[in-house]
Length: 339
Image (cartoon, rainbow, N blue to C red; front, side, top):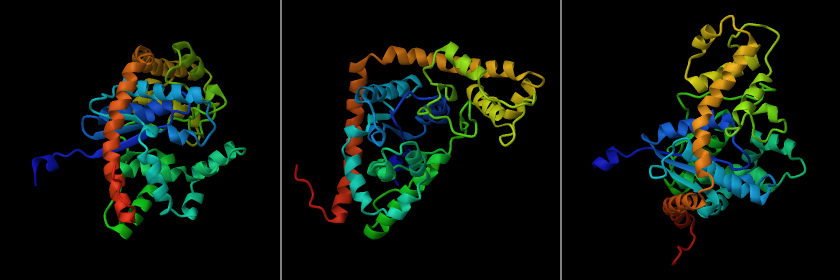
């Protein structure tokens, strides 16, 4: 066995939709962890713009948000030399493999996807085939790059299981073709819930802006939103997600921003009123985001630099994706390309 094989890093794939401004849920749940992975894994981080099309987008905003996600990738510490940072639509193999995998995915599997039911209820006037089918495109995203690991939250576990099922089904028919991806559960990071409705996950598409905090929100806005966060009628700062969902969510956010344990937070704020605690959480978040915002602001208008990164990364991604796609085409019986 060669030294290269022994030392080969496992490959991680993840993607973020550029369908709006990103929240602290995206930061603490994904972006903050991405930077910590780049030294130990081969990381591929995609801007999944094709997924965004399942909901009507303003074209100008979608393009700007795609650049914004890239700038945030960089601002949170991702090195474009170490990581592959590209836009999904720049590598056509995603859409091509998605069609092939459609033919190995069953309608019943897709109909059981809970996110389809959720998004259908929110966009009842636009229940399109892409909305129903986008878990297959997600499977293509992952399987194209032979990813070993995929960082997932609770709401994405079902989609990763479908990806695994599709890969396993294809492998059994045609022999080993795809790596079966495993979920990667970060060692740190809490699921961030809505500030006004703490029983629901924080979402950038929420109509009530007081439900979420954006990564790029100004300091005063962050403090104001946390001051308005829903708590309860008690006075004790204690972690109890069932009976004290609001306070527990704030404690989770404070833990993510400071690295302190829940037990230490309970001790730190023993006897402190809710108002003071909410301000402390807001300040911790604002201070965490300040250097990221400064770096982002220095990058977002450097379009030539951003485009160069996208070009270089797309070329790397294209090379990896074509290797997989060519293998798939050959196995299903398609005539190889001669150009």
